[in-house]
Length: 472
Ligand code: GDP
Image (cartoon, rainbow, N blue to C red; front, side, top):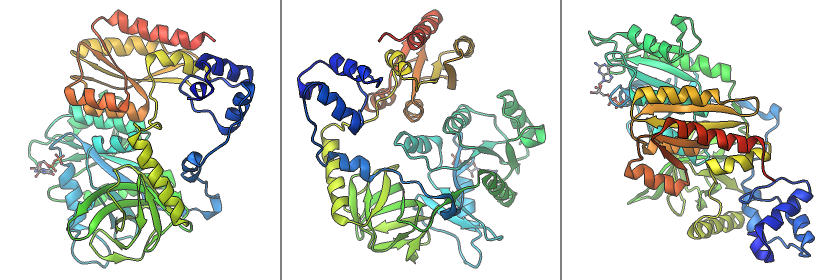
């Protein structure tokens, strides 16, 4: 962009940067100072317009340690289809548990908060599954603190169980296994624990450090013990936020309601949100006219880890969009309009994802230490063989992580994981299905297809060698 503005070639700009001691690639955004210096080299003076407001306005400010207070853990439930995710969430929602409250939560707003009899709270995201989880991450929103992975004890560790595990691990989110359906006569929890151990996942009663709990989501057995374990795990994470500041957080879901206008469920991550606050959420904005809790009761304020439904935005933001309260209404509107415009202009700010060709250049910058790979293949044998060979390519400078491997087509969930974890997607004798291909195009994820093991190894090796001896 800068090169074309100054009517010079991109390489000239890059070498000007190098001569200033700034190592850059073609697609990199330069900071304000560098822009000024580089432009100066070519005899131009830079004037900043308010396009930069956006970046500045949404910048994260850091809270001082002494302002932080404990907050409730935010939990996502994942696992293979029919293993009992919905049943577990429903059971917790309906029975629980809110001290002093009668009746369960009847409506679905995308997230809910439960209070255990000891007074501690847990927030559940009520859209089960790793797709929703990773879609949020791909939008840059890390919401979940802990993942409950549900595995049916009358079945096996299944493909989507493995996916869920990979997705949680890629996000660095600790897992707790809920081994479900133990009321069934043919259930065999030990078999599940053994299968997990074969994946190097050792649960506590097998001598490991991953918590697990046998439950029946349908009848509610041991669900309370599971929740205690969630709190135990959360304690280790020492989750804190500053409640005494203007609020920010993430959009969980949003829709247009006939009577009430746009209704959005948001999760406050920092600060306290109040009725009357002026909000920017994605490309939408508006004054909070009303706030409701998961029971439909009006609320005046919502602190960290609290999900609330709000009325008053001028549209429906997307799940995973960040929101932020603005003291200056005009500023919020300006940014919202600018975002809208940017999106229309084919979003200049879409994140650039890694490609094999890019690796060499990225490593030259010195910020590329790990190469994440997602591997899908037609048979188990070749997936394992490839995993082995690829991992062996790791060296002192670059660590190769196979963040997910499985037999089967490349799916949307793989593309989302690649987007969220900046990974290369490799298909060995398998292709993406149509929806995965469309999503990959949209998210700008590179999918590489191979049918010869040697070619995969060779390409990665070459990319890495590019990494190791960059051509400058
Ligand atoms: P999801 O696809 O993971 O959300 O699974 P669901 O919660 O929809 O459960 C799938 C089926 O398993 C339903 O018919 C549930 O009634 C049943 N189910 C879930 N948990 C249990 C359980 O603990 N015991 C028994 N017997 N059935 C269960």
